[in-house]
Image 1: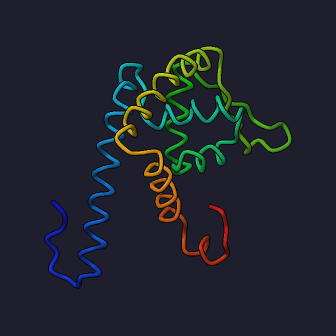
Image 2: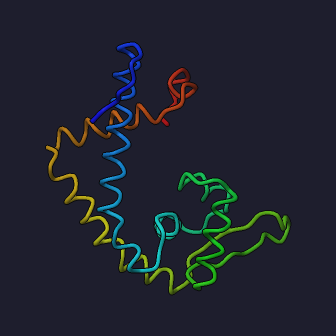
Length: 157
């Protein structure tokens, strides 16, 4: 559908691209992540489990950055995972403010069972693009995701 904005051509093109990006991302996300509700998980909870499974125990601050959530939101996500005994928190003895989150046995088993079919859903969604298109999409998304400071400093993002 695009935009109905009556601004400049630059504005219309940018808004149209933004709308299409958002709609595509939401559409793909709902198809890929639909199975998470069957496991009683939100996307954020799945993100925490996946990050801990692949990276090992992480501080809550690092975990929040990894899954692109605020520290306040992450606290609630981890609270709910902890209630289900999927993760455990531990406090650093030298600095009680430093909290590390790790998977429990139950959390490891759950993410181990969910992740392979999750990857297959993602692969199936991207089959409509050629390998070259997937690489180009990844490159463009990375470029778009960089902050202005990242692009000026040459940071890899």
